[in-house]
Amino acid sequence: GAPSDMLFTINPNLTFYSREFPNQWDPSMTVESAHDSSSGFASDVPSYTYSGTNMSTFKGGMRSDASDSPFELNSRKYSDASDSPCETSPRKAHRNFTSSTPKQPNHYNAHDLNMHYRMSTPSPLSYRSSSSMGTPSSLSQKSQKSQYSHSNTSSQRHHPHQHPPQTPSSYPQTPVISYKNPAYEYQLDKHMEQIQYNIKRIELQEDCHVTKQSKYRHHKPSLFDLITDDVIVKIFSHLSSDQLCRASRVCQRWYRVVWDPLLWKRIVINSERINVDKAVKYLTKRLSYNTPTVCVIVEKINLNGCEKLTDKGLHTIAKRCPELRHLEIQGCSNVTNHSLFEVVSYCVNLEHLDVTGCPCITRISLTPQIMQQATAHHLRQIYLRTLDMTDCYALEDEGLQVIATHCSQLQFLYLRRCVRIGDAGLQYIAYYCSGLKELSISDCKKVTDFGVCELAKIGTNLRYLSVAKCDKISDVGIIQLCKHCTKLRYLNLRGCEAVSDDSMDVLARHCSKIKSLDIGKCDVTDEGLCVLAQNCPQLKKLSLKSCDAITDAGVKFVAKSCRQLQQFNIQDCHLTVDAYRTIKKYCKKCFIEHTNPGFY
Image (cartoon, rainbow, N blue to C red):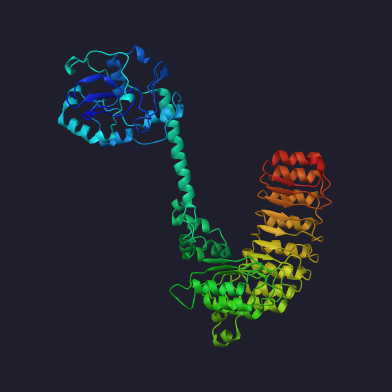
């Protein structure tokens, strides 16, 4: 066995040094292989040098040990480490002597070789001077590491090239050799990128992982968290009230943002399935922040299409929304006059009321209690500005009289398809609602020229009038209307077959600023059309649908005179392609409605 005073470190081609002469190199004590079955240790460093075998060292070059001098061997073995082979820290020694499964001789794995070269501890000879080989500190380290040494004469083999001992002063300077190999560097970079990618993927999976101890998912950050609350409020402002309630259940932040008062100035519910009465009751109670009994922030309520809305829901609105200004309940067939009276009585700021398609509504008035308490005339007024009672089939002249009496501030009134009203109701409208700007009585078959003459008393305030399909109206009523309502901008006479060129002549001379005119199915010829086009150059919308007496001459004259036309309806007119091309030529921004396939 080896003497007990000898210290050696197991590594490829390790060199032994004597305790008595620590600075002297002994070539007779050079180990060729670190893996020796007789030593009792299995090194984690693969054997790189074998006799009679040329191989690629972990430095990347093909070298032959037989042709190397001991100095060259030392330079290869101990570069990138300390200059002293004896000075090895305990941490490095521990790495060198880590136990692992022995590798088969003459078997090389490129991946293991590369990873060991990159990850193993540097050699103890790099970046130190040779003068430190005999220091006391190195001797103490040698004594500490002697527990890893094993003496076995059978495991020691002499180096084939033996040289006489030399003193450290006679050693040539060990050259500094760089072991950086581009191939290894590239493989390491690719390996590190893959590791980083796997780490990120595992972190994302852990964020969404549901632990056994908790029933809740971990919060996963999203880009939506970077948006400020003001922006989220702006986005949520486009949602209906029922959608906002669903959004409030997403997370705590959304719950806090959803109930921002800015989002609840209006309540919009348009669902047939929702129990609107309970929904309105809950929302108005939830939105009563500083005032437990009333909800002052709600100014607009839209319940269109809520067939389950009843008088109970409207009663809640009347009691809890005193600042209500806009109410729409289209298609709510279960609403009656009683609840509507409460709304207009308690919501004193109500300006817009839409009860389209509510067949049970026959009038609009204050409650009997309010009427008894109100002694002055202004206390009995309902300050509505817009009232839409389209398709309220039960409305009659008596109800229209009540509406006109209490809603004298009306400016926009729509009574489409209220088939029971006639001239008497229009007479009340013209008398009490003198500030009316827009009126629609289309499809009211009972209206005659007398009713139109009564409407002419409104005067210049009237800007919009639709008497479409009122087939009892003729030139008499239209001429009277055009003479007094000179500021008309929109007039719909579609289906009034008794209207002729005489009405067009008066209209062109007195209402020269008209912009939209519909004379479909009227008895108008090219003569009346030419007069109209010559005196109304600001005309933007014109409908001649089903005017059989119109020819190419009249249409061409209109196209040349009214070049600001944006919409021109010539459906079912007996026109040629030449007339169509003329319109396209002079009215370049005009949208032409026609039924002739040859015009394309």
